[in-house]
Image 1: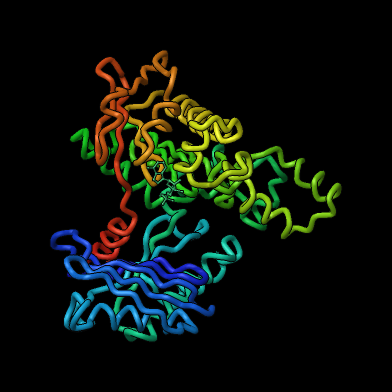
Image 2: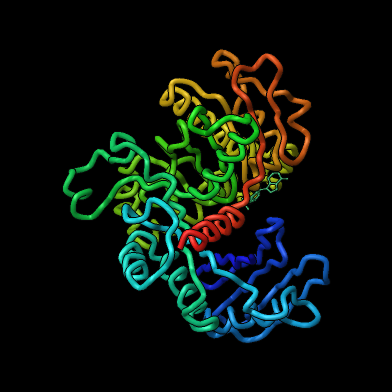
Length: 399
Ligand code: AMP
């Protein structure tokens, strides 16, 4: 069984073709600048030379057709015909309260996704375009599955997902915490349970996804009970360019004082803030580490804020769960930055949390727990595409 996994953005499309017998990636790639001048496909077939093509891609359907051609090409292809693809799994950003697990896509699901677009106006429409483009390119008979970033967090109790604003905004407008990166939190918490050799239903796990976007989740006995992102992925800790949680009163004050429009403040909070806005250097943690080591105080402040906020969530979620068996670091920063991991759990010995500084330098999937730590600290690379492919396979098997 070969599953094609798609992550469609407004002008980009990432993909992987996964052989489910081995769980190995047969090919992966990216279409950039769809619908804009300078469209480009970068295709990386496993065991063969990568292939790049700059060719107009006016729509997502054109992009998908190019990708499907590349997959079947005699030189850089990995399959002989499209009939080898059993199903297509899509990353869908927002499933609202409608989707608490992955689902086979049909016309009703598409309509529900359109309704959820109100919550993720930049992402959900692109996901839907991706779904329709596959239908156009491969026909209606190929099963398609939607895997939602929000779904894993749907188990949160109302005391964790409600905001302290008038209740009518929840009833009428569904304003509440949804949480994101759910596929990643689900994957790494599942892998952590495998590491323990115990059912996830017996474990209290804090998953710490630190990447361009960052979020923390409390996974108690396999169910999320709280997570740091909110109604949108802007909430929680400060991130690369996103501000995370701030005093909401700051917004109207800045709007009045600087005559800012809603799109001005949205841009400021999403694109000019976070560690980039604090440091004035970069949103990339490698650049920040270099700048801080050269004495740049604002770069150091940005790093300190980031690790302090991570630590605050870890402590809060340990309290919320009444203890923690494992803390799992994942994503670009969580997997690759020993110094961020070390600072995020510094001085937590009083809670039974202690990292082994030497083991923490090792790369890959690794247990970095100090011998005298009660809580395990693990680094587990995330693999959202494999999780999407597994869900897709499971749903079409049960069809
Ligand atoms: P992601 O969104 O998960 O792809 O993570 C991307 C982020 O990971 C980048 O913005 C970098 O800041 C960070 N990153 C990648 N490699 C390293 C590294 N070796 N050290 C620190 N940060 C890293």
